[in-house]
Amino acid sequence: MFRITIVTLCASMLISAAPAIACTGPNPAIEWVKVQSVVPQGGENRFTIAGNIVNMGSSQPLNVLQYVSISAYGQRLDRRSIPPLRAGQPFSWIFPYFRSTQSGRGTTTLDFQIVMEQGVNCNPANGHRSLTF
Image 1: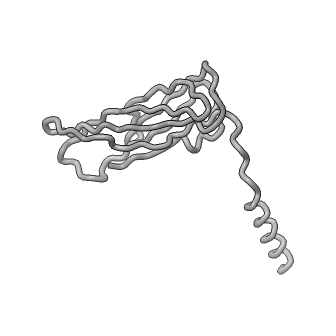
Image 2: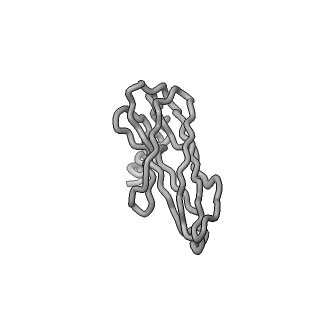
Image 3: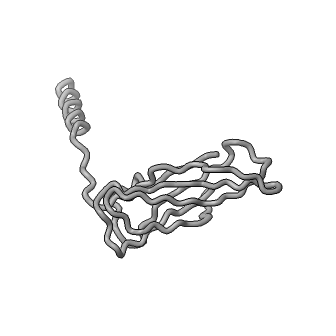
């Protein structure tokens, strides 16, 4: 039993030490999202939400169709188209969001998700961000 435990431990150490598989294709990633500005308008605040996407992989073909889906509490609010990106190329976008002036800090969470309609994203895990404000 002791030998089996040592063998299992050594095997798990080797597996966890294996290098990660490199992403060799297009890799659009949401780099950041933030509240860029807040402007009071009557009983509401107009939040300007800004985001940046960067292609961390190889260049995308010109026929790629992709966008950022913007949602709150599981309900899609809008989307922003993303043009085909060259390797390392960034793309910035903004989204207006209105909220009552009575809402407290930290009570709204927006989710941003890259959606590939046509094309490849070799690492979709980095295509999601949330913003709470």
